[in-house]
Structures are given as C-alpha cells and as structure tokens.
Image 1 (cartoon, chains in turn yellow, orange):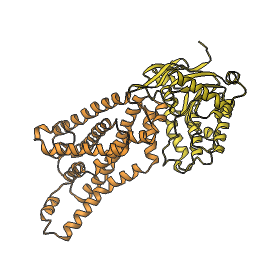
Image 2: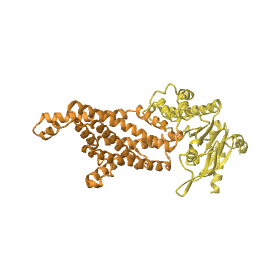
Image 3: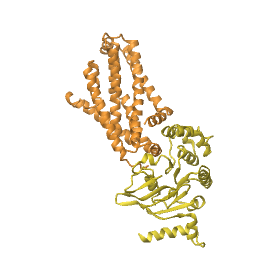
Length: 247
Length: 254
C-alpha cells in the first residue's frame, strides 16, 4: 500500500431501493493531490462524498482516510478532514463570524483561535460581521471554504464549489483552491461536472458515470491518452459513451 | 459533549428566540395578575367568587397554583414544543447538520442537543418562576407551612423535569421529519393527545401520562412530587435513549 495515500475507497457502493447510485468505486487520493472528481449531474459524486464523510452509510465497501475506516471509526477518520457539501448552508440570521464560532466550539480551542486566520485566507475579513443572509453566493462559497479550513485539515473535500457562480466568481474560487493547496500543502478533492475546471486546477482526475468510476489517472496520463486532435470535452463524451455501451 | 452543548447554546444566545420566549414567560404571569385585578375592580359582583378565592390565598398557594396553571395554560407548552421540534429539524432543514456532524459524533450531537434544550428549558422555567415568585411574595401573605420554600423550589424543579420529559418525547417523535413546520405540527399533535388522555382517562390510569399529574403539586404532599419525578425521569431516560438509537441510523440526505 502506498504510504502517501491519504484517502482511498474500497468497492464503495450505495444502493437506494433496488438501484445502485454508486457501485464499486475504488478511488485513490495521494497527499498533495488536487483530485478532480468529475462526472455529469446525477453520476454519484455527491452520494460518494456523503459516504466519505459518513453522512450516508455505504451498502458495501468502505472509505479509509489516513488508513482509518470511516465505517469503523468515523470520528477518528474524519479528525483531519474539512468539507463543503452541496450548497454552502449557514445560520442565516447569524454573522459570518458567528457561524464560524458555532462550528469552532465543536472543534475546540485551536479552531477558535483560527477564525480570523481563515477569514483572512478566504479574503472575507471585511464582510465577517455582516449577517449571512446578506451574502452573495460567491461570499457564501468563500465562507464555506473558511469553515472547511477551521480545524486545519489535511484533506479538504469540496462538492461543486463553483456551482451557480458567474465566470468571475468561478475563476476566483479556482484560484483560491490552487493557492490553498500550494501555500498550505493541503490535499483537495473537488467534485465538478465542468471539464475545464479539472483541466485548470487538478493534477489527478477520477471520472464517475452512472455510479461507476470509469477512469482514474493523472492529468499528464489523461493528456497522453487523449489524442491531440480531440478536445477534452469530446474525450470525456467518448469515455462516458463507452461506459454506456457496456451497461 | 460539552463542546456540542456550548455550540448549541451559542446559537440560541446569538439569536433572538431565547430572549423573546424568556420575556414572554416572565411577563405572562404579570399580565395574568394585572388582568385579573382589572376585571375584578371593574365588576366586583360578577367576580365575587374569584375575589373570595384570591383574598384567601397565601403566597405559597398562589405560587403553586400559578406554576400548575403554566402547564395547563399552554403558553409554556407552545414555547417548549417549538424549541424541542426545531432543535433537530432546523439544523436538518437548513442543511447545517452536515457541518456539525463533521466535527462530532452522532451520539454526542443528540445528547448535547438534549442537554442544551434542558438548559434553555431551565431558563424558561426560571423566568416564569421569578415573576410568579415576585407577585406571590409582594401581593399575598406568606403561609404558615414550614417546608413551603423547599416544596416550592422542588415544584419548580419538577416542572423543569416534566418539560424535559416532554422535550425528549418530541425529539424522538420528530426524528424522521425534516421540515420544521411538520415537526412543530407533530409536537402540537402530541400535546393534544396528552391533553386528551389527561381529560378522558380515570385518575388511576393517568399516572404514566406526563404532565397529567402536575396538579398533584397542590396537594402539598411529598409522595405526589416523587410520583411526578419518577414519571418525568422515566420519559427522559426512555426517549433520549430511543432518540439516540434512531439518530445513529439516520441518513443525512440534505
């Protein structure tokens, strides 16, 4: 087993009634990766992430974070994980700072002392004392990333962090993720349905389609595998069509 | 678990709900008292029976009566039902449950929420008891019963334990509901059923029904207080245990 493997899933599956939403997903995320978890809407990205974080129980398989099983010891496995799942949700009537205080109480002293630091990291210090209900979506995404950073995690899982943002907002969140990964040496798993996002931000990609992880490779490998005369978009479509033909 | 309790309390202290509800419960007995006085003064003949009753009351009788009436009047129940129903479902419907669960275990979260709601219930009971106590001491003569202060304090404590029992029952009942409105509706349904059973059942069958026996505090018998205490504690233990089991298996979908 590779020692640098910070998160791996083993045959991770989730069945709702008689249908598999996620089936036998084997993901391998190494320390320092910005891992793009790519797939169209409804492919199983969010369900997989929820199982990684123990919000949903897996029908089969398990997730290991730093070799600790999420199924067996969720609290220990998630000790060094930060996350933002789906839309960033907050207590609307509290300020951004108060929202961070509520969560930092749960993490303890170290997180409490990091509130100003994380607000600074996501450039939200000035708006921190405004009520969250007055925030734009971009500000909420930034505050969501700040919340994910409160416990100084080794690995940060972001589910569609640029969803619903305008091109400027998308670019600024992408740049923020790259900055955080490089400056603070954090590992990121970023789920998205946008190819260009993965292309611009990630060093590794896992492509999920209809609940199956159909490819996992580094961006270099992907560029080598894809012929020069087709775009990433066409390559992605050809991969998902190939997967569909096996069903 | 103390971290969960602090975090839950911080949410309530930072919002308005705690202050508004405590204020309502503090001023409700004062409002009742003033209204009764005005009605009596405006039409003494019509309210002659009430005048007789009030003029013969001692401080301790007034306090015990008022505490028992707090339960039957509904004001306290409405506030506690809203608190118990929203404690879990608001986090679930707002989508903030996920972030709380990232930082703690499900067991600690549910027990922390139950204890935090206990602390908030205590503040509510204290606010109501304070104004009832002030009116009782200022407006009526203190009775002759030597154990009255301890008995009154024990009654306030029992009111709190009874409310905690109801809170645990509601928290368990709503654990499959994800909307705050639905949860509050079910909470009121439970309150209605408790009230119905209290009214319909014969005295000897009422014992296991929480809050049905709260009027027994007026008998000024310690054995009655013990009976109410046992029922309250049984509700707390059984329903917090059941909530724990149910929440451990809950899938956090939103």
